[in-house]
Amino acid sequence: MNYEAVIGLEVHIQIKTHSKVFTRVGAGYGHEPNTLTDPVVLALPGTLPVMNKAALDAIIKAGLLLGCEIAAVCKWDRKQYFYPDSPKNYQISQYDQPICIGGFVEIELPGSARNVMGEHKNIPLTRIHLEEDVGKLNHHVIDSLVDYNRAGTPLMEIVSDPAMHTAEEAFAYLTSIRNTMIYGGISDCDMEKGQLRCDANISIRPVGETKLGTKVELKNLNSISFVRDGIAHEIKRQLAVVAAGGKLIQETRDYDGQTGTSQSLRSKEMAHDYRYFPDPDLMPVHVDVAWKNSLRDTCPELPFDKQRRFLSEYAVPYTITSVLIPERKLGDFFEAAAKLAGPGRAQAVGNWIANDFLRELGAGKIALAAAKITPAHLAALVQLVDAGTLLNAAAKEVFAEMFATGEAPAAIVARLGLTASATDAGELETWCRDAIAANPKALTEFKAGKDSAINAFKGPIMKAAKGKANPKLVDEALRRLLASL
Image 1: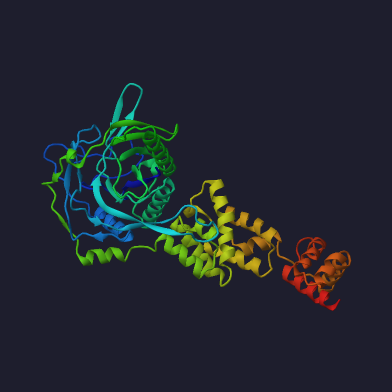
Image 2: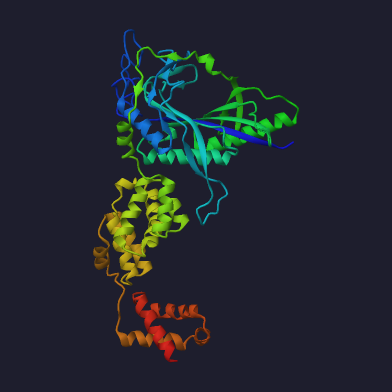
């Protein structure tokens, strides 16, 4: 019997706010343990939560970016569980009235062609709700210590429908969500800092069956690659159990990305195990049209929409747009430089960014915002090369100097004497005649209609000119002489 996997993901994303979700104490990463706390975070007797509007703004914006219906009214619930990382012994969350309903995440399907924009699919969402994060347990050799700095940080949970069928689709889904949240300024989504975390629900069923199989939750997936690897491992495990005549049980399993193995943690809790009930200290939130519209005005162009526009508006290849799109500021850098460079030069701008700029940033571990090169610098460099004032080999040298110093390309060209020489017309003609005479085979091929044969003459000419002849003038002189022979 053939089986298919059914996958749903629960993605937790920390919202980037200055303070925590129900108190004014600061939110952040990397502080000394237990310094971002106050009586509300520590759940001291008599303390009451106060809603952080910035967190609500961010989750409504996220819902708008993902095509959700924004609820007119949402409320807060207490999710009961006892664990050392939860000071209250309950979590303030949303149960039956979340703030965002439905929506979808656009993904590019695995296996799409690499030179053109491939087939896309929308993964439907069940809901997005807002809750407070819990603290963090740090495990040592003989004890475990709890750090409450993270407790109370605004946390968004994005719940997908069980609509994915491969580990690669789940990888694409997470990548798309991450890019969208970064574009919107909602979160930095750094998994190493716990700003994006994911649990995967996986089941298998006979192909053609509509009823879901026994669900297994996979936890501790602390990188997008581990999500993909963990899901692939769990699908194989479930298929092996069924093939051996065994029975799958609903459980939560821990996946170790280093060893590629998993182990059972506990039987899976059901919603009633958490004993949800409305939080008596927080009023429901009413979201009117004006509030939604004010946030809709701040929504950026989505990554895939920007990629489609770059492909059509600037005629930049898919391989280049795929490099430009994941980081919003890099795409903005490209577009600014392309507009300054002028019509027909966008692809050259994209090539410099994808091949040279990103390489230098990576080698120097430099953030884009700290780079000394500006869009105007890059546009000017492309114009110099396009005009024939600067040869490609010299342009590489100018770029490296420009990256290191932030100096304008024209000033570097003048300082280093790199301008492609126009040369004396008579001297250029002599070089051309010498190159033609030295290569009769190329002359015969060119006269027979093979236009590319002209390139065989250009190397000797550039060598005679010591690499400084203007390529356009060389080409013009060659064609004029060849036409007369």
